[in-house]
Length: 269
Image (cartoon, rainbow, N blue to C red; front, top):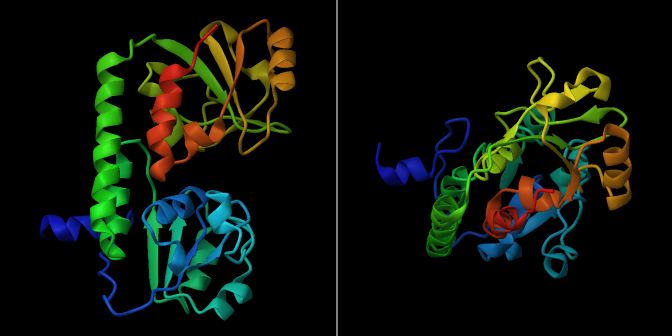
């Protein structure tokens, strides 16, 4: 297999082909961060459907039809759009729904970045399939520079952190998730995770040994935690709690480049 073939292989091992240069692809994207990436690659004109959570860049996506959420997808609405390509993510979308969509959409591109570096392949994959390889390689260069600079200049603080993504019930992330790997670049180790096999486990604070946690992070997405939430939890647990921009730390795609800069600037109390 050539390197070019590797660039065309998605996260489940399916090898895709480049779109015909005279064709007009019709893309439905069910992944908010990848919708943003497609626009960055100059492919907005080919996106015919998006989720309601695909909100960036606002001026571009507001004219693209919504097809539901990342999990509650309107299959019949998508069918009427007659897409040629569907872009999904293993964590964000439901496989049974994707299987139904695969019955009438010819090309299903599955993504699953688990580390910021995985975006390098993601850029090349989409850039190569949709003939925007030069733009993709520019993003690759920018990301590699951000990674190199981050690793060269960021002091590893070896903080033990717990990253909250939801409440009622409270939920966090396991160490093999993209978010945890993003934090690890800073030397922040996700800890306090309940001992189960879920990637996004639920918990009660009474279950957590707070002596093993140096810092709690509350994310602005998917749950919209606020500074008031962070202040209240800090008082309740007698631990430092920092409100963080969830898009910057959890969105892959082109958002990872400013996300790394944001991570480097974050200050621990």
